[in-house]
Length: 127
Image (cartoon, rainbow, N blue to C red):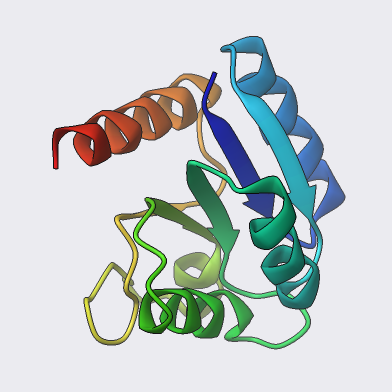
């Protein structure tokens, strides 16, 4: 069973995503801040990470993804955000600025969340 870590400061998003992923057979861990997420990565050892962009700081998720990639974290990262709706701009993954494997606007359909996680894990196995 793959382990998925959700790092998001919105308890509703965390609860809904956790229920959907657990229902799909994944073991789910959660953290509500960048610092707690970094600790959970060490102890929970997730196979994939779902990361919010804005937490305590407006760029916490992006900074966390950058730090993880710099330190050799190679597992898939799915970034969830409502930033595009707030700012009226399109955002996406970028190897240097936003080094994630997939980037999705909130809210995400439960079926789409499971499909994207499954796809990211399958792609990682194929590498």
